[in-house]
Image (cartoon, rainbow, N blue to C red; front, side, top):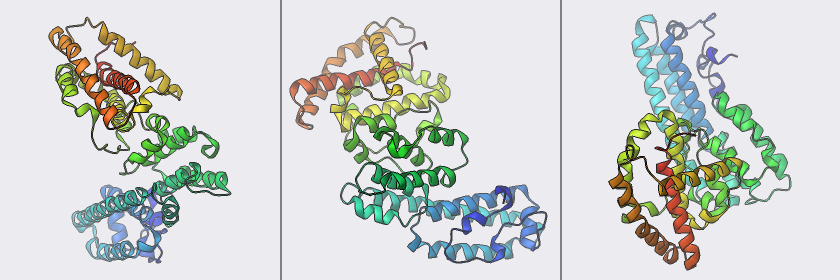
Length: 391
């Protein structure tokens, strides 16, 4: 059945309780009921109906099978009201409002369901087996992706690990994602996730979470370090890099007043550049967000060599940006007075960072100094890359 020929067909097929034939979106060449004919008479209503179907499917996917009765009852009530409200073509406006309200209600339910799923996932470090058992009651891509993580990482042992992972990856790619050809292509390009390195598995998880409202939790980064920071860094170089969201560290190293002082001297030159960069800005902003997280959560990983090809290229670009900072001459873009003030403030910022790394993260003095300088490079490169000329 074509997607345009159903409102609730595939979504309601997920329900545990059977719904009447009136629950199905009409084939508009064969519409029989008054409500069906009203929907078929309005292109806007057809779109609204698809929105309800899609969001309902998401709610069911993100709700454990044991908790779906309330969703089913609400949908039955909506369908009953639909028959009354959408009785003829003169009621199109009222019918549209009904669909919009149902779509909004389902969107709120989906947000709440994903918050509960996120809370469940947050328990992985404490009891991964219990979380895996709970995730089995979900049908959606997010739950399957987290099961892939649990089995692949070995957090939950399984004799048939590779076979399980392959089946869940296939289910996600074939049936669990929005119709996004770019995303699907990238996920297929990952190859055999079951036997791939940790970084590839984490990239698979990142792609799935990008289709949800769920954030990447901090334990991914504290446990996996460099591969996690690379997997959740800038990937697309456009607005797609806005998701998934990242966890918020207990405190940001770049919130230190010493770094704020430097930012005050750099940001006036950065803001116009962000606008000029268009959608590419999202890639820069994403990478800086990851750099901040890395410097604030697991600073020792700042000294590790990049693992992926993309990360090595980014490290090379960072080196160029730092070199440009040390020899900056384009004072039309970044005024000389601000540049010199930033240079003068940098040693204090690095010293304050090294102190935090010694006292909070128990890094040896030499390692803390090196990590602090690496954090400084991230801070400078993340901003300066926006105003440097492209190669």
